[in-house]
Length: 397
Image 1 (tube, rainbow, N blue to C red):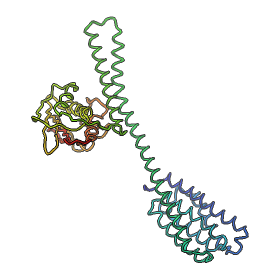
Image 2: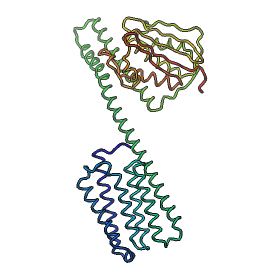
Image 3: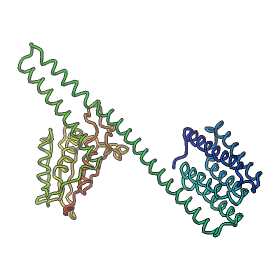
Image 4: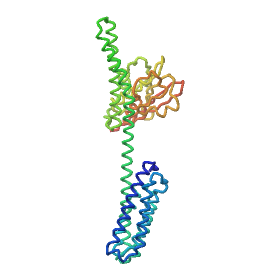
């Protein structure tokens, strides 16, 4: 559990103020009952007054209380409750012993288990002392085991619940951050082609355009609309992967056909040089997902290949089909290689001319791994980049 900050300290201080105040008030009120008349008033009143001192302290200087002091508050409460229960009459000590509940619950709610452990130990020792002092109980050991066991289980369950809530809150914060990242990244990728389409549409209304101008405007509209469609398709692919809705539907696939289909869907497919090993074995995979992964890799490599062709090779080795997509571009800096498969990551090496939301490599890796394969990068600045896919040949059904 992370250390509490100023806001957490304020919440904890108020909570302990309420708990100490309620406990102290309850003790003082029960002193008016006949069952408390045979107890030791000083041993009951003094702890209650000390509880009010804690209330005043937490309410006045709550945010300035040192962080190390918060784990001491439940422990101090356990000592006070032991004093009260020990000093009370035999008829009422069980009622006061119930106050141990708030000690354990508050400790395990606000603190980590190792911070709450001293309070639990003090409760165990204090409750045992109280039971031995009030020997009217038929079986003090059984009473102690039942009481301490109940408190321990309640504390552990509360700690587990708190951990689950914290994990849920962390996931919600991460989702909010992801949504913000998506909006910031995609807004530009949508706005630019939309602006171009709107401008082209407005220009097409001019009566001074000849056939060539109209063809150019139509080309711009089709090109930018295709860009929008591609961005939307990548967003859908990414959402399916992150939502766990991209379960592959495996079939026996020809690697040669997958590469040919992917090249046919790549705008600059004529810039690729193929070096495929003869008689490649079939692989068990979702053809659509692997084809989509290859298209993303081909587009990425052709974007940075410059005037050099992109080399695509495939070979079989030890029950694995290895597909390599290599360009001879500027390469990827070492500090970026660890992050290039992250969604929406666009490093400095992409340059100002890069267009796209930064999802292609993340989608490629997600689809390859969902089919039991692996995708890695081998790049040296100034010497080009190779993306390597490894697909198993065995039936995964």
